[in-house]
Length: 615
Ligand code: ADP
Image (tube, rainbow, N blue to C red; front, side):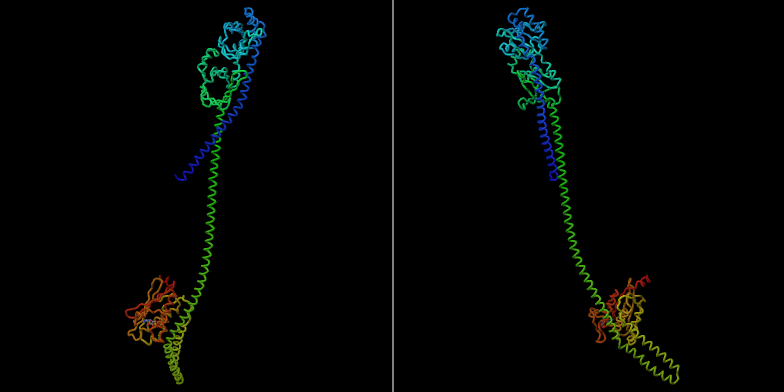
């Protein structure tokens, strides 16, 4: 069984046990308390009823002794004749009527009835032998007699009080008064009390419930029963045992009885608290039965109440405990969350510090890089410029030659013109001057293109018209082209390329210049400039049918200062610079060996307008 199931089960058992224990204790306490209260109340009632019975009896105690004062009665005892008997009979009848007793009669010393208040009735006691009655024997012994019994003549129950009658100091007879105690029972019933009186034999002689009457509260031995039957004290009554189911003595004079009362269905209704007390001057016991049903019911109620309270309190306690646990869990969870939060914050702070430090480092690095880039760009520009100047240097001989020719022609022409002017040959002089002008213009063009080539270009971006750039390059290389017969094939489009014009010219001068170098002494020398579009780019191939690119040359082509040319002719910077100029304009420059000769492929981005134009 898992802990999760075991715990509530244990708690439920504990709760049940606690509730049972508390309700049992409360029940017992309540019963005890109820019994105590009932006993107190019973004691008072018992006292009251005892007094009532005693006073009822005492009213008549003096009555039998009173006959001692009546001389006729004494005379009757001395000489029992009819006249005396009649007189005493009348006297007794009058007395009986006045005192409200059942009967008053006089016995002679032998126990025979001499005179009786009921002398007129057919069932009169007169003449009856009552010597077997204890009240007779008691009185004859000089003691006042007390006896409860059922009359032997008419079977009426009554209390007999007797007193000896003395003549000349000798007991000559017995005076007997029989009183009715039935009114006591009526009084008890009226008060709603369960009360009975048991005599010295344990026989109930008076009871608030008539069915209890003449029942015995203790079992009688057969011998005792025979004696009682002979004495006729209870006439012919069978004297059954009071139907008592159980009897428990709680304290002296206090019992707990359970009657098997057929009238009461509920078992609680048969439970009683029995309190007994012995009546004065008798051996009788007055017993008061107080029903325990109310006590039991109250105890049940109290037990239920206690169980409910305990259950509610325990449940509240459990709920409170659970709530306390939940709060504690929540608190610890919150604390853990806070701890995790602060840990996270701390880490974030650390990380942020790290990040800002590395950011600082990166920024510093970027600044350094920018600086390096600036330096590099500056150096590159210087290099480009140097490369240009080198080319110009290389071309200086041929340029000088190119300029010398018109200069020599100018000198000759100007000298001739002076002579023609002196001769008056103006037309010829004019024609010479025209030629001079054309030569000057050509020289200006050469120096202009040189100046423009030598111009410093700081920016990689810009726009270059391919045709113009090729024209400018060929113009610069014109002196060399004119020296050696080389066919130049132009098979490209006049496109706008995204590169500075002079930079493109510089690349082309390098590539065509290299081709012319390779074509020296080659028959049917040819330089082929072919172009084709490649997406947003344009590819220009400069091919020649010269000596080509041997493997060892091809490996080092783009290395700076690599040259195969004789000293003074080449610096070994041409291809390196051209490749870097192309790269700066987002282009490429690659060498391609041909079966006959070499080819250099220049790829450059087209200008956006150009692209749109051709789409
Ligand atoms: P330079 O022209 O000053 O030698 P370059 O960088 O322009 O420097 O060329 C390097 C070398 O590449 C040249 O010396 C040459 O050997 C080789 N080269 C360049 N172009 C060609 C070509 N079209 N045909 C054969 N070899 C070439």
